[in-house]
Length: 202
Length: 207
Image 1 (tube, rainbow over the protein chains, first blue to last red):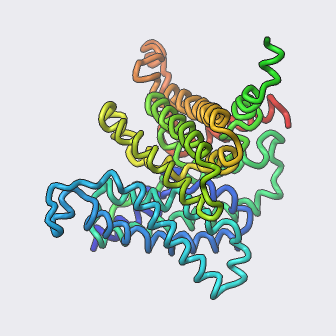
Image 2 (image 1 turned 90 degrees about the vertical axis):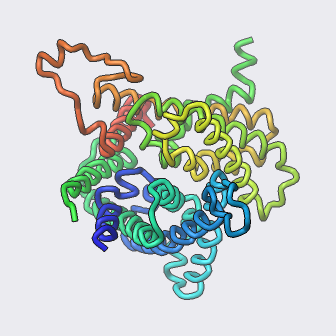
Image 3 (image 1 turned 135 degrees about the vertical axis):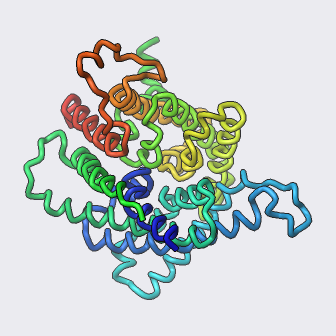
């Protein structure tokens, strides 16, 4: 249990998937102008990560890992090189379902997220979390906690960024630094703040 | 000769990719997944080569199939082609450059979700002949790699005083009180570096 809590805290703060591993930058940079949209996209990412990471865990450990096909009488089979293509297919399918659910139940959210929902498919954070889950040899329960934690960390980062950007509108930024430049530097400062959590052990 | 070359479409495609809309600062999209490998110059170079390979050949393959791919399922076809090429690059690195491939960890796999690869396939390869698409992919890969290597150059130089693993800051500097900048080795260093690069570029080139 302590292990799970520490994985969660680590994936939200110190090992934040956006601020420490640079994953999910595309949607982060294109959406973080508006607080409401950011919160919506953040929630969508938490939701998608919480589903895809465990599902990919099951697929990897029951089908792809070396020796995983022993139940089918193929103990020597190693299909782990197929993980990239299978993971991305699972993610694409799940994002499609999330899109249909949001379309059905929250038209306002659907309208504001618009073009960005399909972008979640190519959001590096989603595929990245699944790949990290394999590389770090998480167990199933750890994979669930890691998925939710990374999603929460990503959502936290994009929501903080949107809030900072609203305040920044009144700041006098040097001309060449306006727009993209200042956002990268603000992100860097935010990443520094998140790193301060690294002393915490549970 | 030079005049004719300057007017050719290939030249314009290369120029557009390398200069007019260099992937990182102008298109913004490509920086996903790339910054984590810029702590050291060597990993950044390998990553750039892998990405150049994938984007050039995915452009070539998709462009030669462009008249056969049905509009509705083109995204799936593109992802399948890109994923296959990424798996090839990943397996190649594991076989011949095992140490570097360990350091790149999941980031080679993440080329699949790199927006440049997908973006070039979608906007360029789907509407241009194979030869031109290949050159476009090559140029985009190099443009992206140049920024990646520039970031890695400064991060390794300032962060650990080395380049490609060789020490370049002389010992006498350290004896005189010079210290490596630990921040450059951490994630914030990369964000700040990209921010400063953009500033420099905007100031030098104007808008």
